[in-house]
Image 1 (cartoon, rainbow, N blue to C red):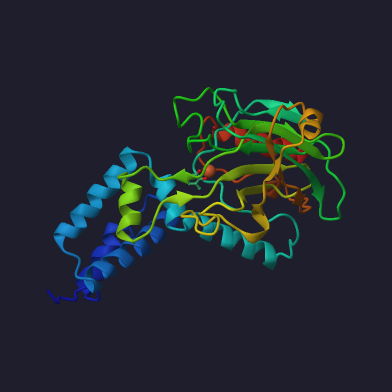
Image 2: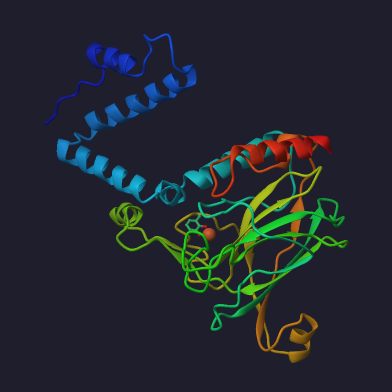
Length: 324
Ligand code: MBD
Ligand code: FE
């Protein structure tokens, strides 16, 4: 078929009707965005001669993605999360908000309300005896190098099989998820287990999309962070452990050079003892630098639907930072 109808007045008028341009109600921005989105897709159908079979298989795939709540997983796979970061980076550069540890994507697996601790927390529930013990620590500082006491460090990561508590019902509540407030020297310390990499479930709709592109759905071993303190810019980031096969080949595009951290295997019993540990462990050090800001909005994570978080939480967070 070689028909090209996109530019005809019939189609152009039809698009305006579909997008509600002739209706008084609705939302103006929604209309503009839907009109643009539909126009781009209609044109694509015309340009690529998309067949009804292809179109309906795409509809079926979207249904499957929604049914398995995988849009949040496909999103980083298609680079949207990283693209939003690139836009934030560019906005920061334009506003001359420079310095600080680089941001990288949040991902879809954060859960609000993890247990809070001062200075130190044990993150694992001890149910994975084969896992390698991880000693995770670092200092939070401002861009001048001054330690920030009382900074809120939220950390979450997967277990030795790539599963995240809450999403993996076999794990205990909030396993491998903690909120640690830095001590007087701006330091946080955690005992946990070394996470494994993460792989998109085989055969899942997200996997089908990636396979069609000749891509894999693997992530390197990584640890997620939210770091915040009054008067400083909220940071969403992750570290990727060095030496993983996928450190530089992350399907979610979260790796950044400054965020690759080498774990150090420590076999010295005295070093273990000093940390209240026994036997061999791996130390992972991640220091964080926060940029300063007086803008309340920049001091909290952006709103987004998150597990166990409602919009009111965000409202109270904003109110709390606005008071400082
Ligand atoms: C993850 O653990 C993750 O962090 C992202 C971004 C996507 C899938 C799984
Ligand atoms: Fe993750």
